[in-house]
Length: 75
Image: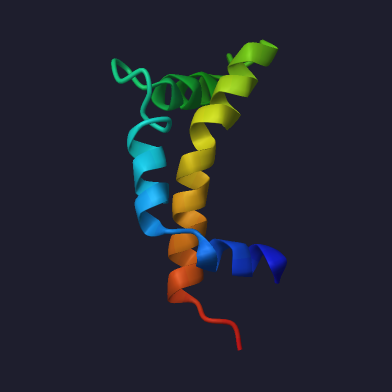
């Protein structure tokens, strides 16, 4: 429940800005798109590629988790 409360305190503005900046950097093409393509082709083998996937993917995971937390109330 600690994570649930932490997500509730997290502001939507912060999550959206993180997705638009870090989540889409460097913008042409976004690393997250490139790394997801590499993952689907089985080419994601170097540690730096895994780091990039996690680093640029965290804002999107937060956005999805915040959306789920907002629509599903515990209880």
